[in-house]
Image (cartoon, rainbow, N blue to C red; front, side):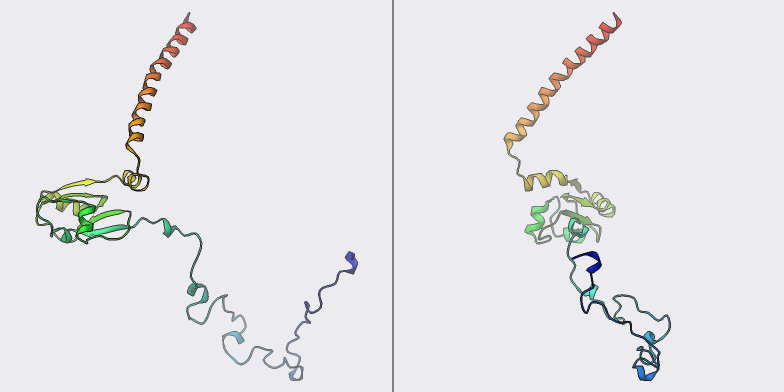
Length: 195
């Protein structure tokens, strides 16, 4: 096999369709464009994937692959109207809301919105709250504590043991002891340079 012997595969190349050569040629009169319509006009082209207004195939097929929606944090929503079912002074947290069926399923946290009026004061422990809801809870004599989501995720996912928590401060104490020694060495260097 040499370069001068290379030939295209049989059937891979077709002869050019010659149009407008009279009716006897088979491609005369309308030249393969049919009668009237958008595609019969000069410059009348249809974009790729257009199906005449029908929902195109690319939009009908399910999408796969990377999508930022997978990293979207979804919060369970609770309105002030829902909290009126609790007695005055009740400590409302995630456990109580789950027991009372106000929130269910998996979510990143709980958010309180200001739909409705709160009739009495409550102590609320949640992750997020709207400005209107905060104002109305405080006006009713209630208290709000916001949970730290990072601490909550660590306790839920990792379950850090007490021994590890106790070891952390020991390491910090050791590092604080080393700091004055460095300061002394720096002071010695300065005195030696002056001398």
